[in-house]
Length: 248
Image (cartoon, rainbow, N blue to C red):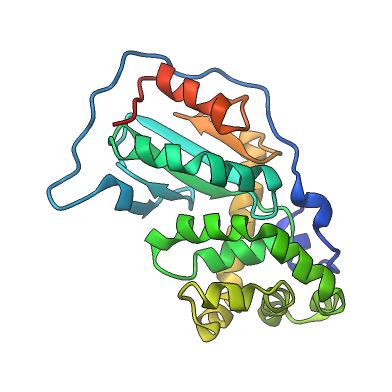
């Protein structure tokens, strides 16, 4: 795992080798139980639109008091995470709608592009974070292609002051235009990408939680605090069902 200081100061190298990250840790077990009855959202609310930032600086979708709490540690330059966003998120949203399951996305930062995207998806309203993350994963191949095409500008970012570095990375990766088309103005993005305090916090939280929880691969899932030995939706869904979750 790259240290926060290294993420902020390294001479940048092309991240294409990170497109397929290693997956899976030794399982510590998963909860099992009877089917849990749906839990209604407060009047006028919808669990699928309820988002909060957790004490771990993750973004929680759904009932904050859900009996089943699913956490994903993800990297924005991880092909496995991109695959889960495409294949698993629709099913996750159906379980979240019941109020029985909440889904929290946390960062496991691997490289400067990952940190840049992690900063940008947090730049707007809280409820947009996971939506923008999924769209960025869908665009991952195009992001890598832009970095290849603009490799000189990307590498030059490593010599720039920190408050300018991630703006340069975003420009080289085609991210400024990408997120501008999704509601984040270029000026808003540049302001977020020059906020070194926030960027350092994202990197530090990633490093500290990775060490504390022994998480070194993405995607890694935890259910009610227990690490799961799965990396795909078809492996994860049966575990949710055994724990008592059902779709509406």
